[in-house]
Image: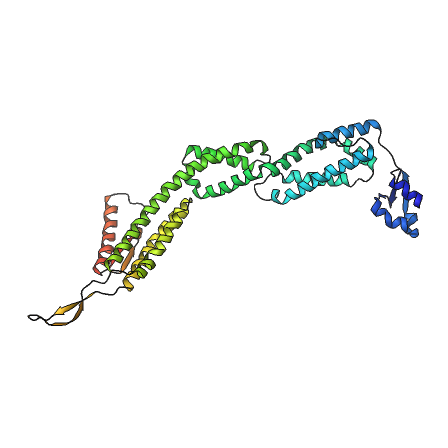
Length: 369
């Protein structure tokens, strides 16, 4: 058994257990237990001829861009190591390639499967023969593997930047479509994103993103400026109301802080829907501030002089309490979706006017939304 083991480890013979090639580690148990000797078959190892070795050597160079050793065992070992390297890299990229809008998933799955089958061949002769039989398939696969590995090594940051930017553009999609340059750039970016093999187009991404980002910044800036101007006007109204009641610092802070925070949020936004939404909240903050000022109001009192004397008899409130707020939705008083003629306009204005005057007569001040 020692002689068999030495021949096996020297590569002169190969051992089979129940019809399957076994490697040195798997051979330990059957070679050390006499009851299993009969299960082991000994075959003279078949060696590849020089022509096959040269072809396998050249194929390795084409696949991996490096030279392997020239002897059979060295060539097979080097090829196994190179294939294992591919396999390891591809497996590391598999999770991200399986996520939405990431290329290479099918290539990775096919390559891992093919490499696994090749590595499962233990006999060096059969390993070389199988490798050479699939030469064209291996060469075709290697191009795809190199593309995928190169993408996830060197281009993935650009790709991720594109996906993040396109996600951010979604909020302003309708506005961006109104600009021809932005619309065309988005269309091209979507084509690149949806391409299963976009590797040759990655170098176009930055220029296309720059086109969309420039337009997006402009249209978002315009909407942001309008919203901030409206918020500033409401801040001015709150400050005026605070001045009228001679508010102290504490009341001023409570009344102004929510609107100031809202302004800060809007100033940092690029999403038009979010800008519109927060700008719409400014009215509610205004109402809340006015209610706070009204509820915190302490009327100013003056001494009252007795008529015809110099005697002061008491105090009496002389300041007017801030008016409560009535919120009126202008669209509520139209009975039609569209006003089509003068009579429709007159009817709408009469209803709206009646509602406004009713609120004024009740001593309220009106905010229209």
